Length: 480
Image (cartoon, rainbow, N blue to C red; front, top):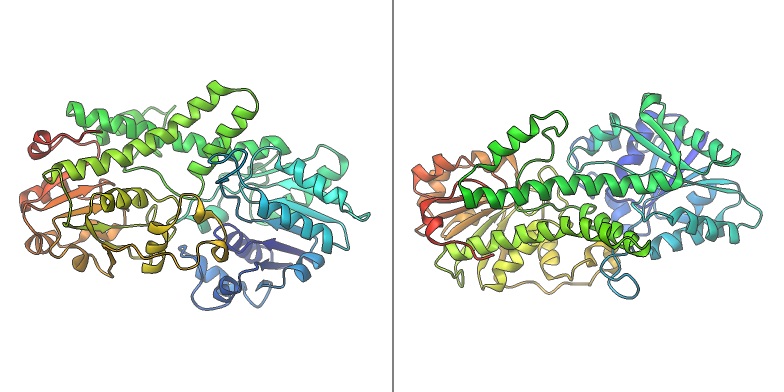
């Protein structure tokens, strides 16, 4: 029986291995992690991550051919194939600080694999890594190999959080990169055989190592670029009276462009987009391509501009001060159907409002108080280190309360900011909310989820990103 081990029980490792176990009952799958709390959660009824459909898959396979363990070395030693899905945070100091990926965790995983291996292994890069990482890992493994053969493959994940299970069950493509040598081709084939249990072979793309590594960064950069493009247009729409939804619809009807990723918003978030673009920028700079680096940097600049613009719009609309005013924040996750807050635009928006002395009342159906306080008190990029290496007990941010329903959050508030597009926010009783708020009552919709006209009839002053401005807002332009 083939044995697979995955190092790292996070957003990628857990769901990916669960689906492999589900679709390959003849393969033993072990997910290992040094965090006891995380492994305990995977073995409990409350999984450490929220992802629609994940519970069912894990419960079906756990105890049969899927296990979760902290005994990392034992499972690595016994496996034929080792997936490495560890954190690759952005460096905060030293060479490439603020851009380059920190491969500390990757390197220690590779050294451990070399140390405990007693048989030949296929090592699969699953974390998003900079181009040429495979080469570095290969060197570490071969220099410590003790006569054991290691084949390195790159198998980047293309999961979207909130739809990860359906993405895994029915992927657009599976990408496998390997060496163009007899051993490399054999390793590619072995991994292709795993996925071929449920993925049509024509959707399994095999490339060289560098193409696979770069394809992941490129895909995320292209997606983020589309969001920044439509967000840049949203600012122009507000200035001219155009409606960004109508513009995006018209643009998306062009089959060469298509309609996806053209929703204007307060900005993109998630663990990958910003990190991968910064990585791409660094690689371009290292390879003497400053013009290309500047081009991709602009995607992040527009994203930061959009968040700043949103905060400025809130403050300027509310008589140029939010000091001491209660503002309800609806949604903290970076998008709906996930509890993930990594790089969520809500962090920068909340920090901007706190900087202006606002009192925030935050509600998100999937994000708890501890996570929100942690996010608001952590330094940039700290979030991407394993929890036990993050600041131990983040100082709680005063002027921030976290509540468990939207009506409590909005009671006595001067304004509401919608920062995640949870479906429930479309169906709230806004008349009841209006009655319980301070007047004038403002709604700042960072996701274009509410019916602005309906809310205006109730009495709200409404700002929706990229939509024609309320007369009130025209009189109080946001200084960007």
